[in-house]
Image (cartoon, rainbow, N blue to C red):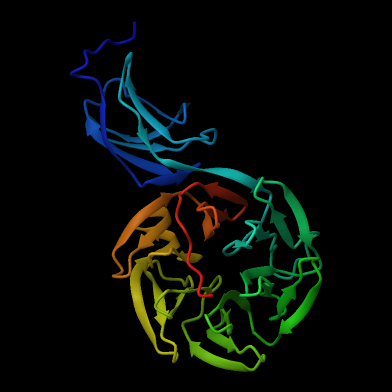
Length: 342
């Protein structure tokens, strides 16, 4: 027989953190009157969620693959809590191989890669996903497509960590060389003056002027994976690059090239993006929890989205956050507006 509880003893959810999650990510539920024997039934989006921790006041639940929306309920037999909410990121496309942020054009089309292992030439290098979610192959014949960035005119630029070239790609998917000799070319970012910055993961950040003059902007510790670049509203370049350490940092580089540590203590930090208020979002892990971290301009950190294998993120004009994992693209309706330097 199911247990019966009166209304004064029914489960009560007081908070859910982080505010967003994706399939496989863990959320922390705090409250009271959670049953301990037997354990409660927790549902997220109407789907039963596996529990990793359960006590009378604290539950850790994993977002099930089937969850398409974020209503969170805790049940003790027939007695159920009031609903709480978490933003759930839903799958847009799989069978991909992103290694950095997706890129989003002015119409809300999302571009992401099938990068492949080093030296592998894949049948499709770049995919285009329209706002309705339709996925189409966009570009072939580019080995190890890596970083993506649009310039102020809306022209897509793609780096190849294989040949050290940054390519321009037209709307008709015609590819031309923009600059070469960039080493193990990974992350890309444009500043407000139209200069392109390229991360050579062996230890150099290059600056390429609009006239395509090449400068060494700064040097950093080499990365075992890739440099990821984003300009902040303060005009500084922010860089992540995973090393063999489990206590990596986010660098902040001044316009003259001086490097300082903005934050240290992340595990494998990767793609990053800013919102309109100057908050920085970065893929990585912090205190053993994986996902997307949010840092305000004072470098105060919080966990924004929980999920595994995240390598990048970008904000769409609609306020959606698009998230790349090692094999897929997800969308989370955050309502957050991204910031661009141009």
